[in-house]
Length: 328
Length: 288
Image 1 (cartoon, each protein chain N blue to C red):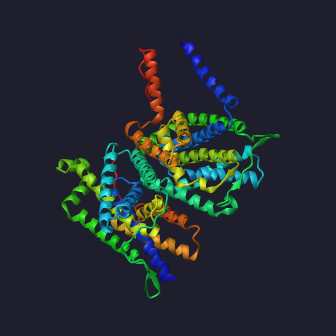
Image 2: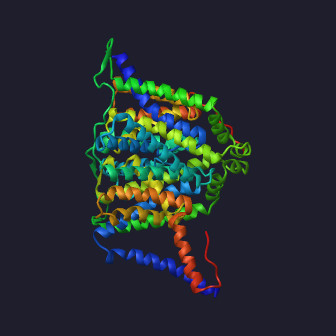
Image 3: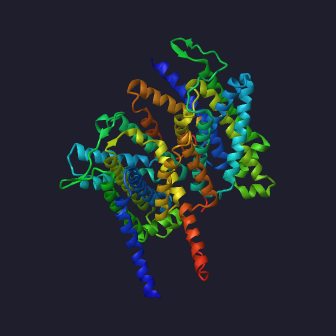
């Protein structure tokens, strides 16, 4: 029994990965573009989850790091002719360096003050990029080249899917790994109680800044991908509203959960598609975000991920009544 | 030039201060920073507009109706927040942001995205004093701001209900043991704060015109004003608003308007780092 369980433990993920990698064979055109967007949003969700979900620090300015990643990657590839494959990690690193610099003073702030300071970071980044036209192209925007590998250009969304899915896979594993290290446990301790964490010898300030830098790294990578996927960047994409949408995504999906990051991203990307034909779709979409955030916070603070696991647990209990439903 | 810039800055600052006042009042009395405050003010203002234009009610009747709606909205949002554990800071922020989304999109669905000129009972031509031009509405905003601060301050410090509100905020359990109904008191705080917000919306609307996005920028600047002045101080909201208005206007006039928004938040972040309690705020002790 034990051995069989082990094998299934490996077959499941392998099957999942194979299915995901063969997706572009069956899904084409606009649908694969939507799947690519889900992947990019999942990255932001993972990063924000490290900061807000695992470490308990709020950020209402995360669109800033998304924008910094997107524009720095565009600058690296266009102005310095650095290949995309180096620009991608460099974009993440640029984002996280800026996050570390601003994070050292800002993360000393607590709760509501941190929330307002991060709003400030978002507004400032947007304002500066908008006026720094040599970098952002101002209101006009800039064109971003598609990545290529030895003559093979990732022109179509189907080809780009592989870049995104492999990045998501690597960064998901990184997230999973971080939460299981000393650092991840320090984050959790800080979330539960900063004072208790510091009495245990955890350097609270240091770990908070690291969490901020890590989450900015994820957002920077996502930004780089979104620029090269769309082939075009404009600063209007990165407003205050986007920052709160990111927060909504993490809350709706399920806080501090990999599955939650994925579900939240799927929800945020698919909802506009579902509502497309309804009059006032944009407003309906925001209405659903708001209601979902409120209802989830009040009745199910661990979000869609928990709801899904609950349903899974009930099915399992129905099939195999000896085991109780699974709880997280 | 300089007196005009200063006076316009004060006029602008008074706008921020007015909304900041309602957020500071709710923060001070219930410990919740309401992200939806701007949108609540927007929706009451839209409501007043409909009452005036579609139902041909006089300005003052529409004004009172809007205040009543503000009061009701405040009570409703408080009822929702009551469902959350009072110490869960993240959940409370998320729910007020959720309320922001719901009110904003609800208003968009009802009133659409058009921009309307909002009527004002005050004369619209500018008054010139020496070489400074100012419109009467700005003087009214400034006056109402001072009056409301004085009224809220007196209410909190010298009336029984005000003292009950402060007691419940300071120590909820002790207040209950003293026979204060915490539920009533928190409802009351939200109702008063939201009425102040509704007054702010109606007074500001003639200046920036009425549309569903009217409060977006004002909300962010009011946060900044509240934090700058000290988030738990009512006079601090005024000081913060005025300082912010004057400094950003000076910067805009002499250096350039492009980076005005950045400057506002740069000031806030620096102030928060040097004096975390703002200009007039008092430090809050935390028990472990």
